[in-house]
Image (cartoon, rainbow, N blue to C red; front, side):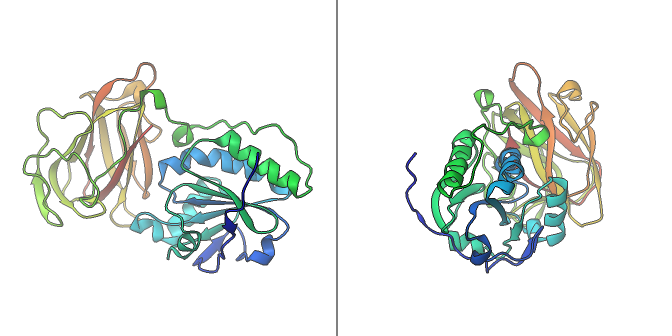
Length: 323
């Protein structure tokens, strides 16, 4: 396939730190095919892309490919270096990672998406890009083509991945619920009577019936621009959704603390529909600031009402995602 020149590889000088590698400059990468992957560790779309990027790094790193992850945070807690280091280790990211907490590398690439892939030839020229999930076979074929152009010998078989948990691909055929943030800055379809009280503690209730893709709160919460924080124990979030998976980005309001929660699906424990962060009775705990998979259905996917009750206060919820 014909790959035009889209520009030159920008500098990584704006990175605020590096993991798995000393700082890398253009001179360190000349002579290698480079794959640059913009990510942030709670992005469900990147999590589902990760098995392929991981596999490409493992397969082609000895054949002339350098994979560089650029972690550019979406949420404030993703600026925390300890959180990023934990994520890199927990998610088995073994290739070099530029920490881009000031968005300098993001701006240098004029990037606007998580995840994003940039394919760079051995002369430092960007030859292709891809935004979002998917096109994994095409992406790998481009890696192979750039390696062959550079004179590296490479096999033409495709990697095989066994993606599980939150990394498993979405069930696109049954997905009817888009992601939705819980902070007032970007939320949609908030259904608690009286609406939002921005940046103020408020007592919320859940209506008797929720429409598809609407959500509500019960209890004493403070809805902030980025997230919604529970002020007293036994607060609830409810969501009417149509998808195989329901995930929630959440975490304790203070590091080193935790909070117990209980999940219901249509008023009952999830049982076989439990996600990896919940037991069959619907019990779990918020410990880290990350993505929690709370529901994974097996069999026919239909519309359901999800409820989560936090038995302890000082929990922050950020965004619902579905798969």
